[in-house]
Picture 1: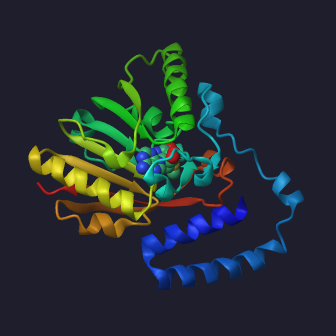
Picture 2: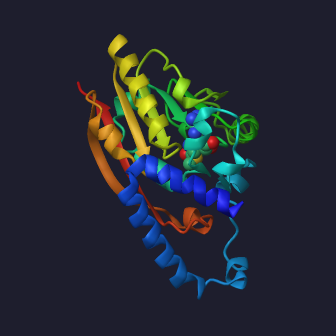
Amino acid sequence: MHARRTVRTARQMVANHGWATAVRTARDHLKKKLRRTSQLTDDTIAWLPTAEHEFDRQYGVDTSGLVWSVDLKTGSRSDAWNTAYYGIGPSVFRHVMAQVPGSLLRSATFIDLGCGKGRAVLLASEYPFVQAIGVEIAPQLHRIAVENVGRYTAARSMEGRSDLAPMSVLLQDAAEYRFPAGPLVVYLYHPFCRPVLDQVVRNLGRSLAETPRNAAVVYINHELRDVLDRAPYLQQAWSATVQMDVSDRLADRVGSSAEDCAIYLTHS
Ligand SMILES: C[S@@+](CC[C@H](N)C(=O)[O-])C[C@H]1O[C@@H](n2cnc3c(N)ncnc32)[C@H](O)[C@@H]1O
C-alpha cells in the first residue's frame, strides 16, 4: 500500500511541477523523513490528540479523518489526479469567507468541487448563499456527505437555525461539472492535480464567456495557483497564509497549522 501511494504521489508531482521539481522535492522529503524518524515512534503517535474534529461532536456529523487517494478509486480517468480527502479547518474556512465580497455572499451559488464528506458545504450553508452545492467523485464520501447534510440540518434547526442555505451534494467528476446560472463562488481545497484543475478552469471560463456574471474562485492550499494566475478571465484579489485555531490544530494529524489561501475574482 505504501509503495502504491509513493508511486501515485510521484506521478502527481511530475504532472504538477515537472521532473526537476519532483526530484528536488523527493530529495528534501527524504532528508526530512530521515531526521524525523529518529524522534517519532509509535508511542508518540499513540499520544497525538484525537483526529475527530470538535465540529463533528458538536453537530453529530462525520467529516473528520484523512483518506488517501489510493482508497478513493472509482474507475474514472480522474482518479489518478485525486489528492486525498481531508476536511477544511472551520476556522480557516470562516477567515477566508470573510474576504469574499458581501455582494457575492448574498447572491451566489457556492460550489465545492471535491467536497468529500461535505464539511465546507455545511459551513457554507451558514452564509446567505442562494444554495450550497458539493461535487464529489468518490461514492463512499458522497454517501457520508448526504447523511451529514441531513444530520447537520436537524442539529442546526434544534438550535433555532432554520435559515441555512439549501444544500445538495452531487456524485460527479468535477471535470464534467456544468456550472449553474447566476453568480458563483467556486471553492477548491486542493482537491485534484493539474490535469483536472486545468479542465475545471477551462469549463468555468467557457461558462462565464457564454453567460457573463460575477464569480469568485476560493483556492485553499493553493499548490497549483499558477493555473488560476494564468486564467485570462480571473484576477487575484486576496492571498494570505491563514493560521488554524486550536480546535483545528487539535484535530490535525497532517502536521500543518496554517493554510495558504487565495481568492480570485472575475474582471469587472
Ligand atoms: C482535500 S479534500 C477537500 C474536502 C472539502 N472540499 C473540504 O473543504 O472540506 C478533496 C476532495 O476532492 C475529491 N476529488 C478529487 N478529485 C475529484 C474530481 N475529479 N471530482 C470530484 N471530486 C474530486 C476527493 O475525493 C476529496 O474528497
